[in-house]
Length: 159
Image 1 (tube, rainbow, N blue to C red):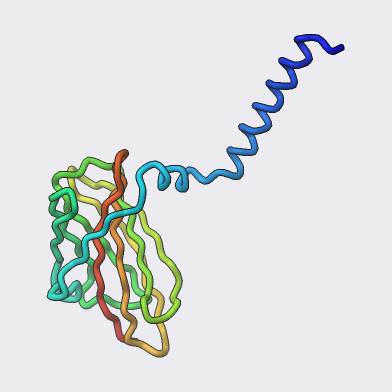
Image 2 (image 1 turned 90 degrees about the horizontal axis):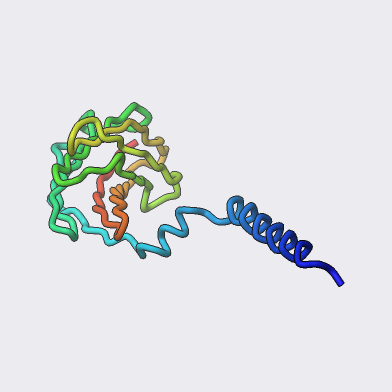
């Protein structure tokens, strides 16, 4: 019969093996989603035109955010500057996800870093399409420890 020491070492090895397997196979983003649930989005009004000016949206938690893309009008295949003004937020970054709704142009994710209190900025670029008239959806995602909220903006680009 094997001793207590053998069973303790076997249990320790199993725990270590599960820990290593969990590290490689469990995505922390999935665990976070399981914890806080789905992101609750507020859609920007249709009168919002990012080609002309910044747009404001009041989020589910009643905080106000302003989103701006420059230069204007929004070009394709040229560097873009994304800016969010959210005075009530104190996060290290805000996640921006951008994709075309009428054709697969890829899924583009950017982290907008806090440059000063309540101001988040980042750079990016949109791909061009020979067909043109792409309708882009931009999701701003604000991940709090207890919930995930966001805003959705739409804009259209030519060739």
